[in-house]
Image (tube, rainbow, N blue to C red; front, side, top):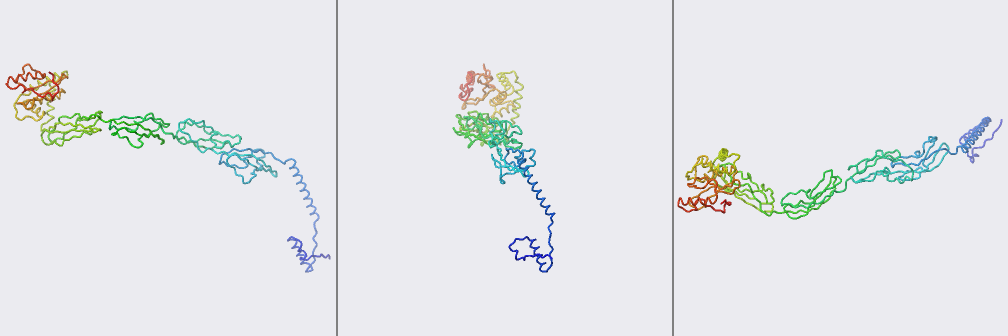
Length: 537
């Protein structure tokens, strides 16, 4: 029996054993203690030989494989391209590899693992790997920044739009060609309206947009106009300017006083006008204002004797107008003082009209108001009826005077009356109703008929203070001059046509009457010449 000596475990402390070896030794030692024989382990020779053979074969294959790669395939074909891209466009190392025969088997990484592309030009270092083969190369990258916004002044001639102008750092491409073009061809800058417009472009196939802002920032221009106005005339701000020019003149313009409005009752002053366009741009224009003041007082026209039936409202302003010496209407500022008129009591009253112009000059006129208890409309209707029966269309005014004279003489007779009428209208009313009366009634019906026929006429009376009173008419038909007219039947009328006679004829008749009745010659057609227009001699 073969005895195998086994070292004690303590004898192996200096040796480094594997766990399996320690376990085998411990097992062998236990068997020896128990005197159990240990079987000797035999190494298989065939296994060792096979292992050695395998190692040799693999070593040879590896050697020859490495040798083949080193001698025939140490490098591989690839193409690297520089890139020009837009800011914000994502880029990876693979994007630098030009697609080709081996590109799907080549992996590309940045040589610097923490490389981050930045705006502008930069070198890019790459590591390319295909299988066990590794190649390092360098290219470059240019990151372009689009223009954020383009501004243009409305209606002004601008430069021709070019795609390259829409990149802020186009020069950073370092000569590398790239494709940039408009997706939609833009218009000329001067053809764009005010507002925001989008310009679409493409850089190497990547589309981007740039905002074109067209704005109007230039204020309008205008020439000042110096004004001279009559006091009180309202002026508009646009009267102080002319020849307005603005790029946006097709849109509404706003013209106003800048600080204070003009004083149209003052004197010379400078007015500042604000001319503002639709987009809020404005300019200030300075113009002179001269205010002309009235030199003559105003006038009131259309007043006259007012007739009113007792109790009726009195229309004081009917037909009344007023104007200043510039001819401007002041009717609305006429003041009527009718405090002394009692429209509920028959009588003769006075009404006062007054007006003050813008300068402060004033004018007053007084008129008579008759409050009557007769039917005025009836009087006018009867007068019109009488005129219609005697007046023909082809008559001259002088012929109409004769016709009226004859009608009065034929329809009214003389009668002594103690109650003398107060007004022409009452006299005419009694002439129509009673067909008789004194000289005042003859004068009254004649005046109404002459007036309604449109013949200029007025009352004339004997000088007050003589023995008896007498009234008759003055007429001026066809502008022949003022003549006497007296429809009252006189006792003598030799050589005188009473419808139309001169002043010398009136004097002769006065003397004739005086001789007949044996009293002074100034008792009949004597009057105060200063109160009447010049009468034909």
